[in-house]
Amino acid sequence: MDSSAPPPPAPQPPAGPPRGARRRDRHGRGLRGPLAPPQVPISLSRSELFDDYVRESVERLERRWPQLIDVEFAVDEVPEAEPDDPPAGSAGGVPLGRVLPARQGRKSQIVVYRRPVEIRAKTREDRAALVHEILIEQVADLLGLSPDAIDPRYDEE
Image (cartoon, rainbow, N blue to C red; front, side, top):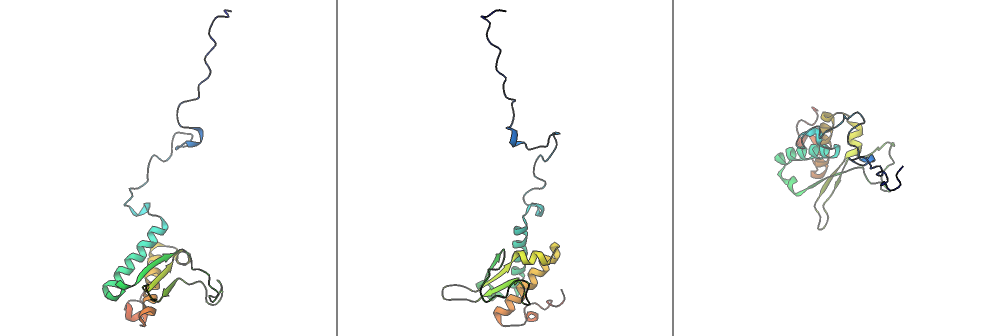
């Protein structure tokens, strides 16, 4: 053997993405891109879909009751526990919505709680109908009217 020969080259790491950054499975298959374009409802998250249910229902109610333009509508994940609230599972149960009357420097606000509604209504159609029913009840409470006066189809659903 010739001692003046250069040493063999060191092994090189394989080219490509680092070991933990695989985007496809070991068989070369897997997701290549998004399943649907962003504007298609399948790509919306559950909270975005829920916000759409609230927005559509509010638009329906505002067409009939223009004074609702001065009311803020909000979505919270779950109701905050307050000392005067009954515990969950009691006769009162968990609220699905709440009216916060106007105060100095703040508009009236109607809040719908997303998680309790999602637990009670499993399908999209049921959730949309329940959201609309909750908003009718909260608007009726705010305006001091019966739910039937707010939406004549209230008892039909």
